[in-house]
Image 1: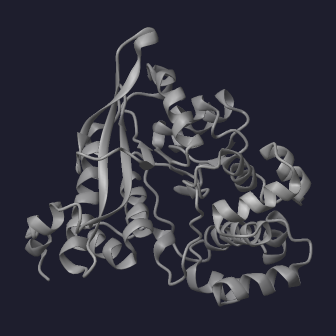
Image 2 (image 1 turned 60 degrees about the horizontal axis):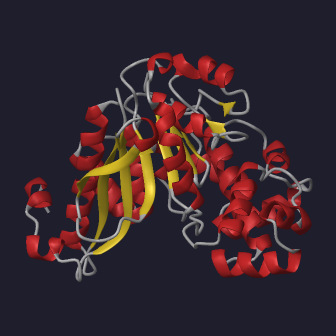
Length: 351
């Protein structure tokens, strides 16, 4: 298929809701002083990916893209949709992206007006994503407290000072904490966009999109193993609260009683509702989260396998190795040799 074929498009096929399956809706947050080129660029990335997916797949799929902006002042402040790639149906935001700002974080205004909206979305299972100074918008909501996050290297100290509960790691360009994703540089929205294309439409569509826009594929997606993508939009807020706690505390020894207390339900009820909501037992879910975090450490650091095992909650490294190999295929050391970028290979970073 040639480059021009990407936009050839069977319009009837693509625009017929009964034939095109929407795999998710990504909301782009157009806040005051944000980088408008990121808004348009991300829209183009998802358009290229969706066009390719609908034109080449026997079961056409597409990403719905919407843009949201602040309206009103004071108590009348709210969010309004100003663009929708697939209008006419109820919005169900699977992801939101807060793009970079063109002013320094100290000069960003009206950021707090987004807080209630973002918190409401998170409570419903929406995955939160932010790039560069846009991470400060998420920080204001408190959603990053106790979590790992990255931002532009020039803003990292300020983020750590203003929000001491956030574990700031400016050495990493993208931190995928499963339900919250932060990206560092002002152009890292390209990596983030391709990462979401991979999640929603698959690696072949992501690779085609990267080639078409003349961008390198995101580092962490060049692998053959399926990523852990937990169910978050299940409607059980108590279970979602426990999931968020697990993601932020995966290295601890987490007991059913503690997680049930976090969720505010009885242990037996919690275990039943957790399985119904997530499709996994609590043990299976914890293992999946820990392996996902271990894979990231193996890819992006030179930390020993023994230390990584402890960092993700395993005191017995043999148990960790067996679980890792059963889940991913290779041993931890083999996985690092194949996918690690911190061992003798240059790491690409945006300023």
